Image (tube, rainbow, N blue to C red):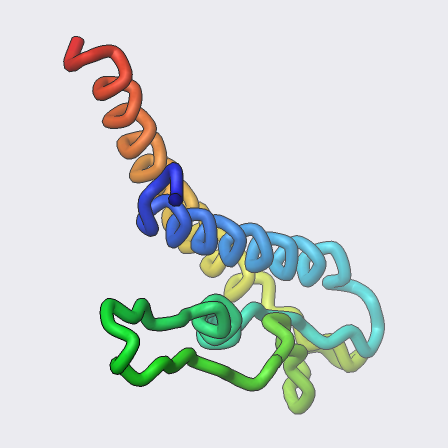
Length: 130
C-alpha cells in the first residue's frame, strides 16, 4: 500500500528533472570560457522515458493481459556537438542559458508550490479539518 498518491511521485520526478536541468545549465555557464567545451542540455523526453520504464498496468483479473512499458535506456544529458558560438570552439550561448535558467526556475517553483499544496491537504486531513 502506498502512503502517498501518484501525484507526489510525479511531482518528485519533475523536481528531479528540474534539478538535472539546473545542473546542466550551471555547468554550461561555469565553462563559458573553456575552449572546445560543448554545451549540455537535459532532454525532457529522456527523463520521461526513464520514468515510464517502471510503468506497469494493474491487472484486476487474472485473464487480463499483463503489460509494461519498456524503453531503451538513454542518458538524460545531451551534448550539443555541431554548434559553435565562440572562436575557441565553445558552444555556450549566455543569453540562451539565462533564458533556460529563468524558465527552469519558474517550472521548479510551480512544482514546489503544488507539492506544498499536497502536503497542506494531508496536514489538514491529519488535523481533522482544522
